[in-house]
Length: 438
Image (tube, rainbow, N blue to C red; front, side, top):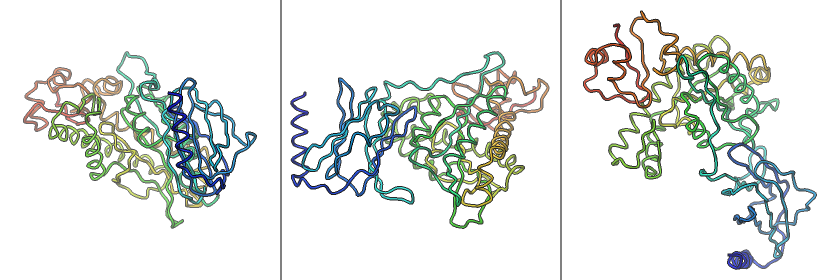
């Protein structure tokens, strides 16, 4: 094994060229750390050829950069996240080797980025723990008595290497949305029957699919992605709420179908791996349609509440193919709280009191929805619906059957079917049905 690796390194050196000339330099080396991964960023003077591989016993990640000047050990950053040490060496022939000593086995994934308004050429390497070695962050639930707590996944957009939009005075989106998200989590935490989980609780980068996965791992009932938009016209202002568009849903369904052999518990605990293509597509479409419908209903209530705090740019829920909204079985909203490119809204977004008002409005809209559409096993179902109520609305959750719902509400199955215009007992996760008076 050692001989083979040595041979690979020798062949790599030959393949990279024998000129020995330095064509550029590393301007900076930075780390961003989160609970799921550590991001390593090389700021470079020009695009660079590179090779990345890992070694074990002990665990290391090796990066070879071609035609780059040597780095002094004194210029290296302090370790962070999965990185516990950094070393460099000149491999000769213009090849700089950087060795990262890591705390555990990681999968390194590298890509290059062109210059943007903030940074120049960059080489980015994400160090991710293999799924089998990572544990989903635990979710704390309230007392079982009185029904389960609903889980709200709150996702502050951007973070780490990705600052998001920047206002005229330099206020960065990633910072203000984290403030709003933390305040929203605090509001939710004090609401009986609901529990928040913050997808990002610091300044680090998470991929869009990692954000979705975090929500699914925590069995979230609702996913809220918080943002602050920007536009070339600085007069534009106001909040906008988005749900997934039909085109976005169709694209995501096609991706899931292509990967269904590896999909496990994709939609409400149902795996697609053993389903024929037509049935798998039907199941995905039903689940996604129900999630979008529920998302729109939550979004309308959030808009109603935000209208008392800020200007609303679009009075109706908008639809767009945002990647972060593409969970097939979790109602998901993307909330553009303001236009950070607008001078007045940028200044307001910096104010902790304004952040709190936005958080309170979003929280109130979410609670408005769940009080009128309580999942049967939830706190809201058992504590907010009087026994002598008029017809109530019931949201289908995992594992429920129409006959069980009829028995729970003490109505006959034929009456329940007739009340909802159903010709069969087939129901889907996220579907809303009416419960007739007893």
